[in-house]
Image (cartoon, rainbow, N blue to C red):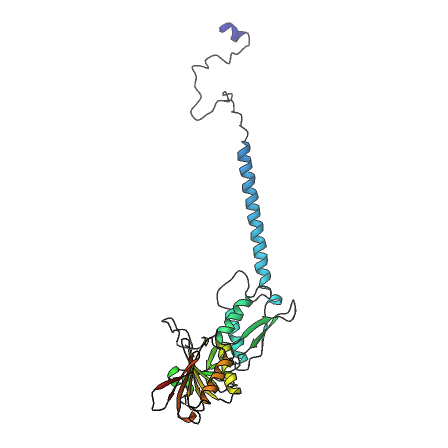
Length: 323
């Protein structure tokens, strides 16, 4: 050891094992732990990552497209700015316009504008106007592809006859008891409703409606149809009666039975399904028979519901039959 010092050589290993580094200091040449080599990411994990990134990209793209469509739908140049009404005689145009405005702007926020000329709910608006007043038909159109005005064309119902409460038929009914009926048998408004026309015929009908259930509204019978399936045959019978010189006052329908009050003073009873021309001929034959000739003013009713056998009744007498 002494000889090494004298020779000018210093041994750095001398005393290394016995000496410790001062507290808080790190040896300058401390041994390093070799790093563990990184394992490559599995193919399946890489695919999952790619799919996730792709899905995120698609989601962002769809969101941008959806936002763009929503923004586009609210542009003023593509939104309804005017409403015109054509054919409203019994309805005020202002009422229809305001009602359509409330349907379009219902107060709820929507992603797509309901006023957009390409997206507005045309069918819903037509049904809404029909529910406002029982018109015959409603159609909504636009003058051109980019027009911002809509045109509401209304075809109102025309009054054909009166439908009255069964107990009032033929007894001088008041307006509150009767309703307007069109040629298809649809009852659509009270008699005397503002703006409605006078019935084109003097016919007064009663009965012939579906039974009223608990769900019927206070506007019943408005919205109901009078013997819809049998109405053409019934009107044909009334036409034949008129051609034969009989004047119909009122018609009451009870199930399959028809009770026709004639101006001649007696009641005619018939059934659905019989030939109208044959019924009128049978009536003429009965009235011209020996037993009834000259007694028309004494008749209470003539019953033609039983084929070739006809029943009749004179006032104050019992029912009789003839063939």
